[in-house]
Amino acid sequence: MNTYLLRCKMALKGDFYVGDLAKLLDISTTTASKKLRGKIQLFQGEIEKMVERYGLTADDVSEIFLNSKCLKKTIAKEQS
Image (cartoon, rainbow, N blue to C red):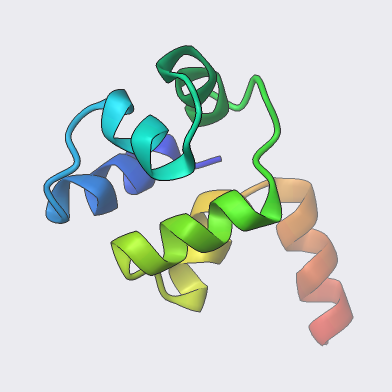
């Protein structure tokens, strides 16, 4: 997960703290922190809330949540 890009998108909407994300997702700050660090899996509904709140584009979603090198190589192979 590209935490840096997500945090930038959050900041653009005035959400500067993990607590802001926790409130959006209705979870504890500890859980939100673990999700940001990739220690706990994000659920589809949580990603959808972030897409709506932070105005994420399809490219943003791909870059933030699907930035695994292996996954990108797989997608590239399927598209060619």
